[in-house]
Length: 409
Image 1 (cartoon, rainbow, N blue to C red):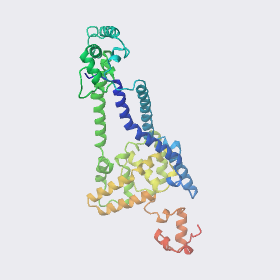
Image 2 (cartoon, one colour; image 1 turned 90 degrees about the horizontal axis):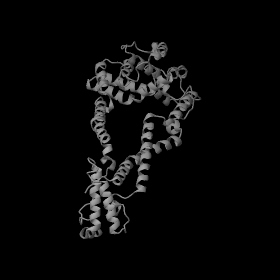
Image 3 (spheres, one colour; image 1 turned 60 degrees about the vertical axis):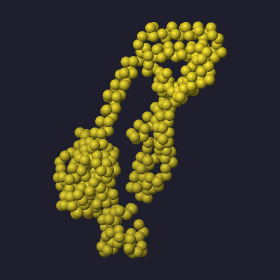
Image 4 (spheres, one colour; image 1 turned 45 degrees about the vertical axis):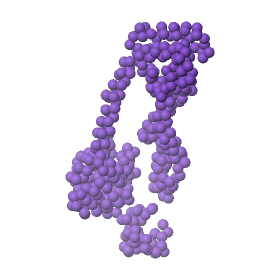
C-alpha cells in the first residue's frame, strides 16, 4: 500500500536542490574570484593621462573588489542560493538522522525490538490499533493509513504464511513486482494541516503560477528582434526617413521606449537639466520633441558626444551609461528600420551615428580626437604646423614620425 514517505521526500528534494545549487554556487564563486583577481588591463583600467586615471579609477570601482558585486542581479542570486543552501543543510541533517527510504518493517511499525516474543508483539498491536483506530480518528487519513500498516505488520509476525513471505521477500503479501512510496512529507495527511495545505495549493495553482505566466508573457511580448521593444520600432518608423540627418539622430535615439521609465526626470533634476542645457545648447540641433524624456536623453547623449561627462551628476552618469549599453542593439534597429523603408542615406547616417557614439565625437569633430592624449588644442596645432596637410587619422599615420608636428608628444 502506498504511503507518504518523509525520507523519500528528503532525497527527492536534495536531488532537485542540487541541480540548482551546484551551477549557482559555481557562478557566484566565479564572480567573486573574478572580482578579486581581475587585472587592470583586462578591464581597460590602464591610465596614461590624468583624464584616463579618473576613468580607470571608476572602472576599478565598478569592476574590481567585493564592492563591484553590489549589483541587484548578483545579490538576488546570492540571497536565493544562500537560502536554498540552508534548506539543503537542514534536509541533509534530517536524512542523517533517519536516512533510509521508507520500507516495510513490521518491528519498526509496531515499535518493538526485532527479537520480541509473541506476547510483546500482541501487546504492541493492541495498544497501537486502539490508538489509530478509524473510529477514534474520524476524517484522519494519516491515522487510517497507520492503522492499516499496524494490522499488516501484526499479520506478518503472527500468521505463518505471511511471516514466511516477509522473511523470504520482505513483504507479508509475498513477492512484489515493485515497492514504491510517495515522496511527499507525511504532514500533508495530518488533519490539522488540511486547511493550510488546501490554501497553499489554491494560492500556488490559482495565484502564483498564473501570475508568473502572465508576468513573463506581458514582459516578453513587448520585445521584438534583438531584444528591442516594439514601441521603439514604432517610434523609429515614425521618425526615421530618407531625409534624416546625423544631427537629428541623438534626439530620436533618446526617445526609445527602453529609456522612457529610467529617463523620466524627477522634480529635483530640473535644475541640473537647465544647467546642462545652457552648456550644450549651442552644440545641439534645435529640439523637435519637447517631451521631458527626450529632452533629458538628448542632453545626456550630447554630453557624451561633447566629452563633458565629468559635468554630470552620479545619477545622470548612470543613466547615460545605461543608454550607451543599449546603443549596440538600438542603433542596429535604427539601421534595420531604414533598410525596410529603402532609406539608404538614413541608414548610412545611422551607421555614422553609431561610430560617433562609440568614439564620443560630434559630427564636426576631427577624427584625430580618437587618438590617445589628443585634445582640441592639439588638433588645431597639428593642422597649423602641417599647413592643413594632417586632418585625419589616415593622414597622420602616413606621415613619418620625424615630420609629425607632435612626434614628441
